[in-house]
Image 1 (tube, helix red, strand yellow):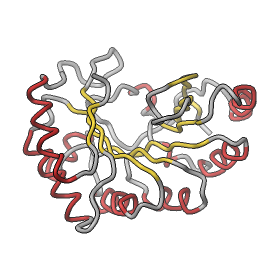
Image 2 (cartoon, helix red, strand yellow):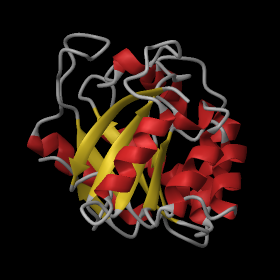
Image 3 (tube, helix red, strand yellow):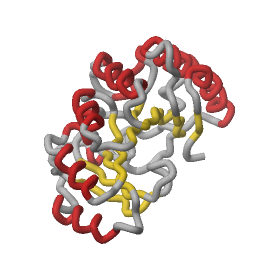
Length: 234
């Protein structure tokens, strides 16, 4: 298990819970705006062993009540379910961050009750998905993950990191129509828009967040298609 980083406490990553975030190395996307570009290569040196992580989590019981498992893309890890099972056995709530490219892994983890909350990235509208993901994308896999979450088997959120150079109001209307097509009878439960924040670790320079007016238009475009839409990180 490639444990490539850890954030020891967060009040933002898991709504309503005090959590830590464990970052697993390796990703099948190359999003231009990714903050965790150092985690993209699967061979990145681990910061701790799995045993050390579990010992640390055991000591943090009572201070933390949840663990967010992120990346990279954690569903690429062949022993992901084993790790989730060990964390759940300690009594922690578990949140899984995913780009949705491995719906079979997502479904299995949920059905085995190894995950309590899922955050799935929606990179962009279908027509511009590969541009925002920085790589080839199997949209059928993305759609399978979206449809599974929309069924309500687990609590979830969708989220988009919003970049002025990569997103338009039309994109968010198209995302909303896409969600409606995938689930005509049930709106998406929760959608977060996260304005891009530039950092030294971002893959491409020169990207920026939309201004407040632009972001408000994006919210308005998506709002008819979701039950709750929130701008996170402002």
